[in-house]
Image (cartoon, rainbow, N blue to C red; front, side, top):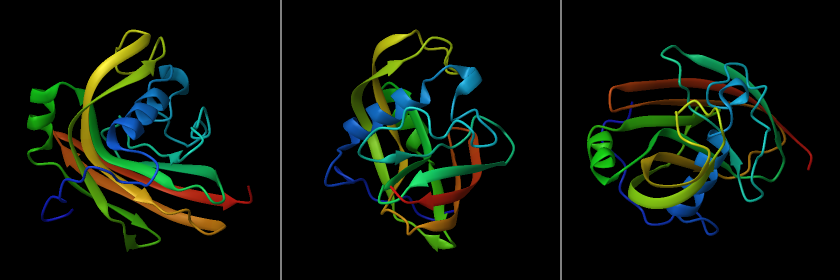
Length: 180
């Protein structure tokens, strides 16, 4: 685990500001529970409804370690939340106080971006695992995220470990990066 929290940044990509990437991630992560990429323990749903700009990866809703396999198109940057939350400003402040984590790609530590309470809007689907009503949701998001440049074609191991707000995340991906 990281000993010190990463510094807060206003933008993590030339393309997407924190409100934009959180809206994309929470829309993607708010799919029905029976086909949700966050509650998925094998990776079979990782390809569903991916946005154009970035390839999204997920932590876990499970208390135990999760291992997934996922096919990723070549030349797509990756966005991996270590720990994240959609709530309100007070909830984010509490959640982020002791947030820590790490992301490793093939054993190499990736830079984390600390996102403070940021308002955003996302689309939730009926039956999502968060108990949110279907439709447009106005929320405040926060978390630790890793933006990873597009990995080379081939197989890679991505490890996501973190903790915040009493939750632990421990996910290992086998990424199979292929041609576009």
